[in-house]
Length: 318
Image 1: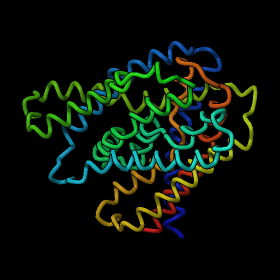
Image 2: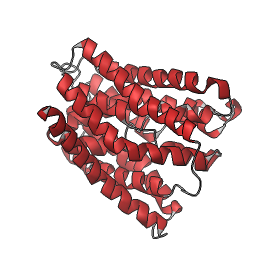
Image 3: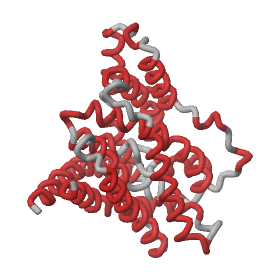
Image 4: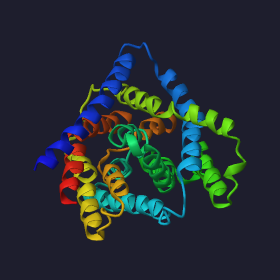
C-alpha cells in the first residue's frame, strides 16, 4: 500500500500545482482583470501558433517509428475510449433524448491536451518528450470527435452547419506534416536553428494551456446548479467507469512491463474530465452554457481526487 499512497501523493501534488495556476487565472477572470476576449485571443494564439510548434518539434525530435512500431494504435485507442463513453452515456440518458444529448460528449470526450500535457510535464518530467509524443498521436483520434460529434451534440448544431473543413486545424496540420517528414526521412532538411526556434515557441504551450484551462473554468457561472442526476451520471461514466474499463483492458493486455510510460499515459487520458473546448464551442455556436459549464466545473473539482486514485491503483496493479 506504500506504493499506492506514494503515487497518490505525487499525482495529487502535481494536480494542486496546476490547480493553483488555474485558480489564479480564474480569479483574474472573476475580477475582470482578464476578460473573455483576452482568453479567446490567447486561445487563438495557442491553437494557431504555440501548440502546432510544440507538436511539430516534439514529433520531429522524438518520434522514431522503428523504436515505437505500434504508434498507430494510439489514435485507435482514442476512438475506442470515446466510443465506449458515448455508448455508456447513451444508455444512461436514452430515455431523455434528444433533450439530454449535450450530456453525451461531457461523459465521453476528455481534455486530452490542456490538462494532460501540464500533468505529464510534472509527473513524467524526465520522459516528457515521449509523453508529449503519445499525447499528439492520441489526439489524432480525439480531434474528429471533439469538433464533429462533440460539437454537434453539445451545441445543438445541425448537419447543415457541419463541414469537414472545420476538422482541419493548425494542430492537426502540424501533426500530419511532422509525421510525413518522419516517414519520408525528410526531417533532416530542417536547419537546427529553425527547429530550435520552433521548439522555443512550443515550450510556451504547456503553461499557456494551464492558464487557459483555469481562465475558462473561472468564467463559468455558479448562479444555478445543474440537475444532480445529470451531474452524477456524467461523473460516474467519465471519472469512474471509463478509467475502470481502461485498467481492466490494460491489465489483460499485460503491456505495462513493456510500455510503462504508454500505459501510464493511457490511464491519465482515461481519468481526465471533459474537454473545456466545449465551453468555447457553446459560446461560438450556442447551447446551454450554464448547465454544461456547471457540470464540467464539478467534474474538474472531483478529478483532483479521482485522477490520483486511478493512477495510484494502476501503479499497484502493475
